[in-house]
Amino acid sequence: MDVLGVDACGKQGWVGIRVSDGGYAGSLVDVRLEALIERSGGVSVIAVDMPLGLVERGWRAADLGARVLLGERRSTVFLVAPRSAWLESEYVAAGDRCQELTGQRLSRQAWALAPKLLEARACRLADERIHEVHPELSFRALAGGVPPAFAKKTWRGQNTRRALLAAAGVVLPDELGEADRVPADDVLDAAAAAWSADRIARGVAERVPEVPELDADGRAVEIRY
Image 1 (cartoon, rainbow, N blue to C red):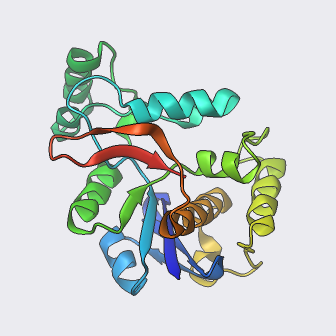
Image 2 (tube, rainbow, N blue to C red; image 1 turned 60 degrees about the vertical axis):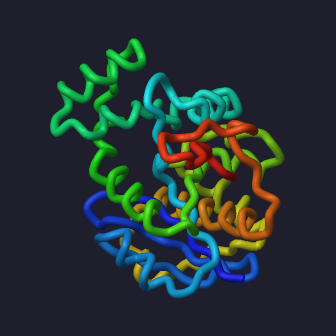
């Protein structure tokens, strides 16, 4: 059973980690998500670290629930604005629309996700294999329900996450081929997404919230892990 975990990696585009029968099977990097998915071949599940489902008003229950589960790591979860805010062409207008629909303005950090978010949503609409994940929820599950104590950009945080993946069978080699030049935290996030993709494929993945909201098209707005 082959699956793919994907994380955005700045100007390089997207990094993918492929897992086969629970173990590391290779890496991919491409400037476009659609191209990366095409190159991945016939994987059964694709897990992407990017908001995919959007609500019409208010904050997503998925983000609020994830923040509760992550405790001290809650700041790693951005609150995702309603759908119409992402249709605006610039930050001020998007913030105004977010204020109208949630009572708060959209953060600049969240708005910086806009190009990748819209790209990932377009892929999801065309491919039912794609699911939204959040790596910190994956690492929390890998650690037995306790979020890692150190941030993923720290030396100890990265070593902890790599060890958690290895203990679960996803052993990342020292040389990653295409992903060798991708920041380490993005590789680790893609690998955690792949671990969650494997759980989705096997029917044992959890979700936040337990009963998902539905978007305007009736699709679940949820984070899997």
